[in-house]
Image (cartoon, rainbow, N blue to C red; front, side, top):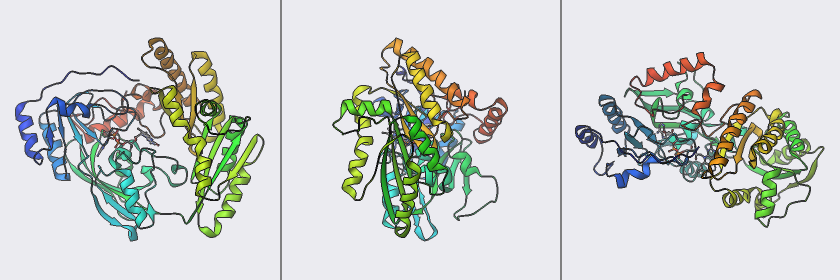
Length: 468
Ligand SMILES: Cc1cc2nc3c(=O)[nH]c(=O)nc-3n(C[C@H](O)[C@H](O)[C@H](O)COP(=O)(O)OP(=O)(O)OC[C@H]3O[C@@H](n4cnc5c(N)ncnc54)[C@H](O)[C@@H]3O)c2cc1C
């Protein structure tokens, strides 16, 4: 929930600032409030200014910074490019922001071994560009790929449409180099495609939102680019028919490389705010991509077409060339500008339910929308049951905000009742921490807090995040 900015600053001991300066190259320590101010916010729209910003360029500098913060008990918040939505990069307790923006080098590219080692500040799209030159890609593909960093992707386990077939960072990182909250240097994982020695600390640190360790290097798993791809657009008369099609698609052996959906409210919005032509019976839309080898792509597409066909299908089209692909995506792509026009400060949640319960979730969300008098628009990664629930409110309207809070509370209860989870890819940060106790049982939460203590005994690393 957006909150009023915390404009206060806290000064750090001059001796700490002096020693921090010694750990960094000239010009890589910011202490002037005019410079540090912009490092206090992220896409959550919260703002808490840090007292200093460190811009390390090497692993060793990160080690020195973390050790120094321990010595002086100064909170330390890692930061990528601040595109995250739940507030993970906001320095809630002031202190130091460790921005990874200058740790932006690809350190080693080994397509023959199918991996690439990068610093955490490398932008996702730079990884994709390098990999593509060798005929590969890294699977995590958030829509923000042109701006967000690998460090942020790993910390939130961020993904995108391709996750349905190729997985999230947890499935696509072989190993890490990192500095724990205690200032210890660790290496996790392997550089091979198999490996079972020791606990899987790689998957523990991925998704830990910068609360256990600062990631200083990541060994990313590369996947060969598919030879061929087909794009399909299926329009259904209602969400029930679309959800039934998703269940049929997911219950057969050809996994699509993307399976995105938008609901009827979203379609109505596109109708009102764009010129895209939409059949009058349209009540839900699926965008489907199929990839594979050239020799098998038509057969795979036919199988998916068959599964997508059934009761309630209004229109199904397969693109044959780039122009047709662009035209099929036009309807889905018109949604974001429409949303920005109607509700630029909407609340966007990213809940997940089992695919077979998606229709029930959307139907019951409609009831919640009516009960709380709030327009809700749903779209998302249908193949993962990951639904972006958008509450179209103006957060400056107090009454609306209160109704939205009550509605969200009931939404989370509903999602857990349906065996779902509160976040599929955006993370917990500050925004969802009060709800975490509803999903994770007390004993498990206690064990997680003990693990946090092992990594970060003084609690300096990203305090105030993730845990209720
Ligand atoms: C237009 C837009 C579209 C988006 N689309 C998607 C989408 O499709 N899918 C999706 O999943 N998300 C999406 N997001 C959310 C966001 O882009 C992702 O969460 C992204 O991974 C955040 O990366 P970042 O570099 O901005 O990280 P930040 O926001 O700066 O940080 C995120 C978290 O990572 C931690 N962190 C950063 N670097 C490190 C490090 N080196 N070591 C340890 N912890 C670290 C921070 O402390 C914080 O907790 C979108 C955001 C926008 C604005």
